[in-house]
Image 1 (cartoon, rainbow, N blue to C red):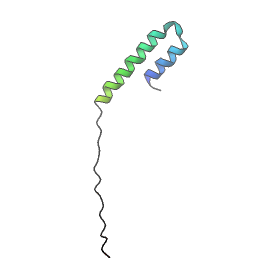
Image 2: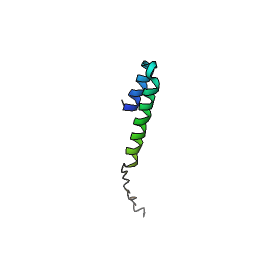
Image 3: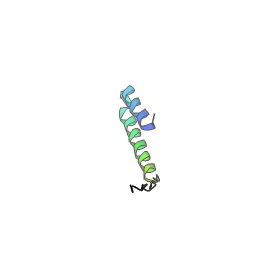
Image 4: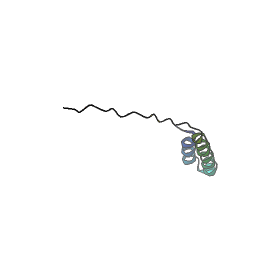
Length: 55
């Protein structure tokens, strides 16, 4: 479970501090977004295999 999801769950169980838990969830979502911006995605080009179709 992610930290943000955990905070949202706490918000459901702790109505007196719901706003605090939702603020924490928002903070964790923002941090996760920052980390995603630094992710490296590698796409490899797969060459097309050509078959000799001469009869």
